Length: 159
Image 1: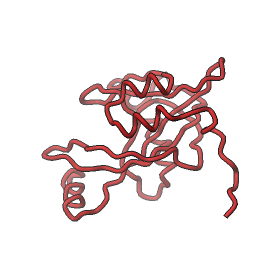
Image 2: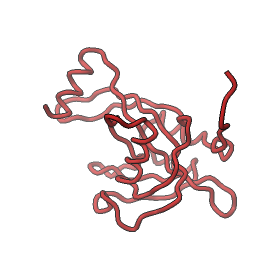
Image 3: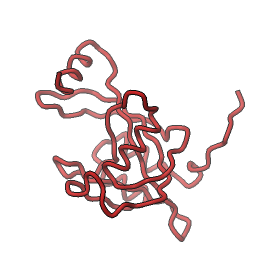
């Protein structure tokens, strides 16, 4: 069954439609945070790499795969999600409401050639500049609020 039909059926039953996203980041020489955006394949809008959950993979692992395939970057996903946001996904015959969990990816390598290089462009931007280019209001707010302090996550939290 095509994924669109399966997704529409789940949405019609009231099930949450979930995706995972990667927010690739680096700290530049001036100590400032930069995030990478990519263009969407269809509308060429700036977005973050994202996709459907992958069977047998955690959200973090899926986010790393999306970052490699869509943005051509490798790195390490921070343990805790950066946050979540919702948007309306355009399918072949309708729209569905999707909840996305976003993971920060500490980029260690930018590939010259990657799976979707021919259909996407990528750009490093400050969080405030990236937020202006993103159409999804909740993702824009999430990215605008990112700081270097968000990149330091404790190894273990007290219960």
